Image (cartoon, rainbow over all chains, first blue to last red; front, top):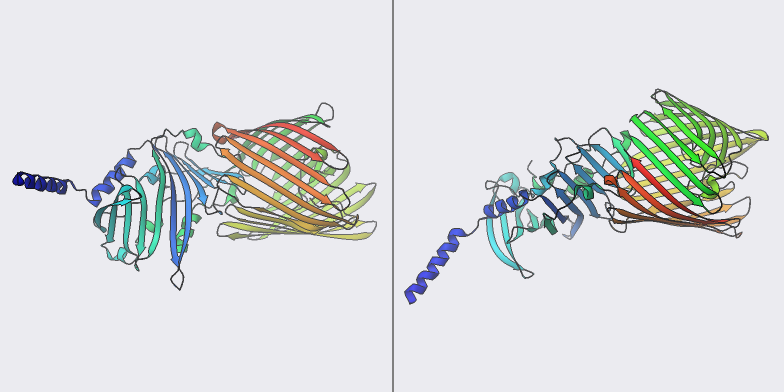
Length: 239
Length: 344
């Protein structure tokens, strides 16, 4: 009996080792889940930390609500924080080939042509990936946070140019591949950038009309494309 | 460096509407007022490029009058005929002229001439919009850039109200770009010549906008013998400031506070006001406005407006239902209105 029991333990341990997910697997599953979505909505906040000469952290936070539809390609961002940005809305409409920006202080909607050379509308659904196998060494842990089982992926940069900026990152992802939080640490191992996601809803049947409808405002059209880029420059500091 | 990174991220969302243009607009509105009866307004504008456009509007009130406005804008010429709100300088917003306006554009210079009958009006207020234009005016002006983001406007106005008098006006605009917005400062000085006596007035308008924050200020002095085409009454000295800062991503208050002393009437006036915009949903927006002038001569004045706005057709059309109420020592009236605006 003891032999059988030992065999079972060894068998299950071996089985779990064979099927343990690597960091790359988790990130790939996460990306795949998002890339297959018809629409996505979420709340997202980005905090950038700076430090006083005494070492006190001085966080600067920007929060927004993002809604995106894959077909037709539409992305809408409603800024909620800081107060200086609150109420501003950006729409990237890949079907109508236009971008729109609403400003509550002027009650104007600036409309400009959208060119495909600009950031792809749905590119936000590709999460800010933290590099590939050659860039980082990834370590996976399973943790429990607020009664929720999470993957914690810790990445340490391998390349010299990345090492010059980061010491590591921590990426928290639920078991069903929903991102919760990403913290990037600077070379002194202090928080550098923190991105947090909330209320992520996938395939909730967002309507293009809802995303395209802005508060009342005077539409001002301009010929030049808006010069914005929704990629996050700090995610690729070496480039 | 970190602040710079976030700032860069924010900056990429900021754009300048400097070369922007409006392409087209249709508006149909009607307003029933307890004193003035029912107004009907229809207007249409079409712009083919930033300096080529045309439009017209019709105003009809069965018990009062019929008026119209039509304009044509070309790269070298602008012609306007009918009732319209011209600017004799870079601050004036409250002159309505019934007549014509002709502008010539030569190498970034605008030379304009206007002739007609004028009145000081406030577009939102029924007690003013129904005034008769009865002051004969002739205005000759010149507007020109004098450097990057700097403009100057000069004008000479002839006012033939029982006797000929002249208003010489000079205003200067300076725009400075800020990381998330800009600051625009306009200084205006005018000399009114009447019965061989010169009367001096001066105004300053400052508009600071940074992202969703805006602060506007208007202060100065209008000589009591000088006609006013501004918020200030003749004889007023003082100023008004307004602050616009969102409380949340869908609640947008604007607070106003002002004080004026009228040297002619020896009257102190405190201006209080609040505007509130509330985006209840993508398809329903509420706007409200309340203004109160508290006068030491008991010449108090109250204005309130509340509007429900319904954006449709993906925001290109919005329908608005509103109620207005105004009360002064001489009259009290209420309006109910409907406005449909389509932008294309």
